[in-house]
Length: 185
Ligand SMILES: Cc1cc2nc3c(=O)[nH]c(=O)nc-3n(C[C@H](O)[C@H](O)[C@H](O)COP(=O)(O)O)c2cc1C
Image 1 (tube, rainbow, N blue to C red):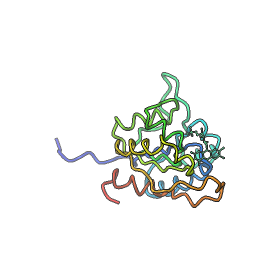
Image 2: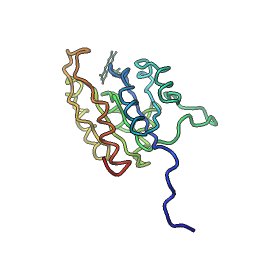
Image 3: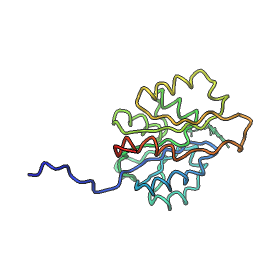
Image 4: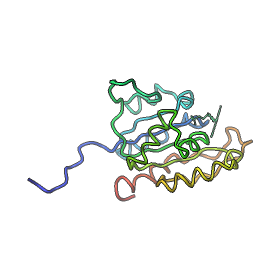
């Protein structure tokens, strides 16, 4: 029997967890470079986030159904298991609930279990400075970092900025995760 490692027969699978932030509709800006970098991609949206994205376009691009609700017992799993998870955009709401161990959406359930399953996970927060000033927020990020979650560098935007916020660097999720999954940048 050979002691050589079994060659990988499939591409690494990236879950993109999409929360209900105004820029969520641009998630294709992460899916495209991920696919170009040889990831397969599946999208998990929060129930609120689902209303912010073009589900048909995302499903056509990924080739997988968007997951948002739990499957029924006995139903097949719609997505392969994740090799890595990118939470982008990540809302104030989901960040705080995830850090607190609340699992009341499928997205949060996947994120809460990812820690125990040691799945590399990156989070790209997208929130304004008024939300970030809440005393729960900093400890939530600190707890996620302590759990090994890779946190994006984006600063909170001005609450009055409306749609005029700086470009969201979707590709930062791949910059953070690729070394963890593939061993080099
Ligand atoms: C147009 C619009 C844009 C929003 N943008 C943000 C945002 O950038 N960041 C954020 O934390 N919440 C934002 N929210 C509020 C979230 O949608 C709200 O907190 C929601 O409950 C988050 O749900 P989720 O974390 O389950 O996705 C926005 C709401 C609306 C209506």
